[in-house]
Image 1 (tube, rainbow, N blue to C red):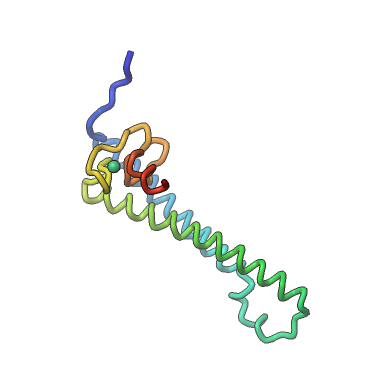
Image 2: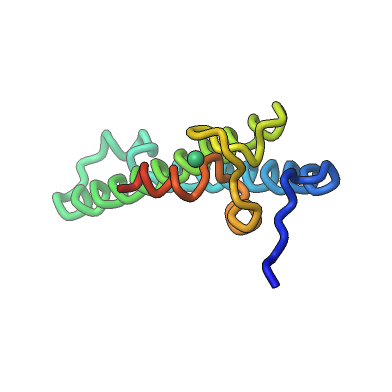
Length: 125
Ligand SMILES: [Zn+2]
């Protein structure tokens, strides 16, 4: 038997999704702050000491790594905020590109989704 999909997320399902996304956003922002604190370049005192070239290299690497993680977290924060805003404006479950319904299975697996599978695949192609 074919699985039935409801055309709209019922309000009693949207509320917990909103809470979930808010919680997720809080965690992402905390993690981003932790990574920023770990970034050796954020430690101003370090810039003035006479570190050996080895230490410099380690700090360069630490900074590059922290920057990469920060960038990734920032992208996730942006996506989560976008999903929350769409939820607030009653556009959650609607693909921001083609305006069609996003598959509910996809939203269950990836609640931050703002595009349907087809549009997401197009973007990544
Ligand atoms: Zn789409």
